[in-house]
Image (cartoon, rainbow over all chains, first blue to last red; front, side, top):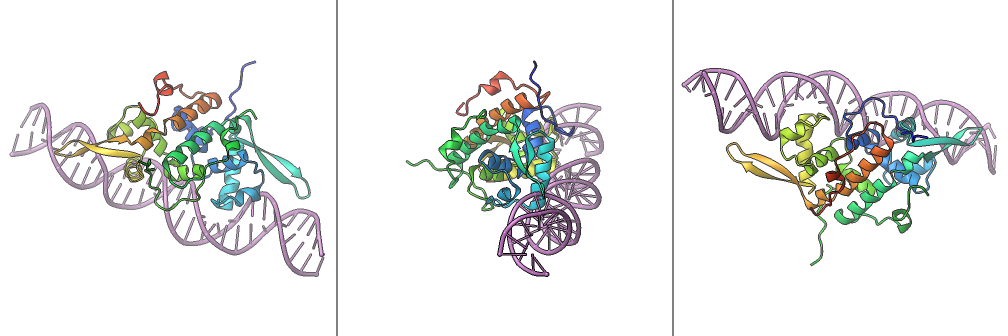
Length: 128
Length: 128
DNA sequence: TACAGTAACTTTAAATTTTAAAGTTTCTAG
DNA sequence: CTAGAAACTTTAAAATTTAAAGTTACTGTA
C-alpha cells in the first residue's frame, strides 16, 4: 500500500517550498509551543494554559482547532458529563520532534540562558 | 577563550525555553524564508522580493533590520553612489541550516506536493 | 540635457490577528 | 445552596500584516 500524506493546509499555501509550506502550518508564535507541550506529556487545556509562556485562552482554543483540522493533533474524550477532551499528536505531529530537537540544539548554542532540555527529550525518537 | 553567544533577543522573551526563545527570534511568517534565501545564494533586496512567496516590501525591510539587530545577518556595502548593501548570514544564522533541513525532511514526508530541495542543500553543512 | 529605468527602501490606510480580560456552560463537592 | 473547576467564548483595544503607491539616488540612452 502506498503511504498517504496526511496534512491539510487549507489551500492558502504561499508556495510549494517545504519550508514555506511548513510555516503555513506551524509557523506562528504558539503552535510549536503546544507541540512541545504535547511531546512532553501535557494533554489538557489547563496544562497548556499553565505553561510559562502564557498563551491567551482564545488563541489556545483557536490553535487547537486549527492543528486538529490540519492533522497535527487529535482529541478524544477522557470523560463525559461534561465531556472533556484530551489532545494528542498524530504521527505527523510526533514527526516534528527532530525539528524541535534541532531548534533546541541551536538555541542552546547561540542564545544565552536557554534551558537545556532533559536528556529524555533530546534522545527521544519519533516512533516512541 | 570562552565562546561568546551572540544573539540579542530584545528583552521580550516569553520564557527561557529554547523553543520559545528561538520562536521569539525567527518565529514569524517571513524570517525563515529569508534565511532560506540567504542559505541558497541570495544576498540582495530585489532577490528576496523575487522569491515566490512574495514578501511585502515593508516587512522585508523590517525583517532585515530585526534579524541584523539580533545577530542573525549582517550587511555590507557592495557599491557606493548610491550605497547598496548585500546581506549575509552570521555564524549563528548559518547554524540554522540543520533546522531548515529537518523542516524540509518533515514537509517532504507529510505535506503533499512540496518540492524536494536539491541534494546540494540537504547535504550542506553549517561550517561551509 | 531630458527621460526612462533600477535598486532599495518608506509611507499610508485598510484588513487581519493578537492580546488581556471578563464571561459562559456544565458539572462536582461540601 | 454555594463555591469551585475545566474548557472554552466573547469583547474591545492594541499591534501587526498587507497591498499599493511613493521616495531617493543614481545610471544609461536619445
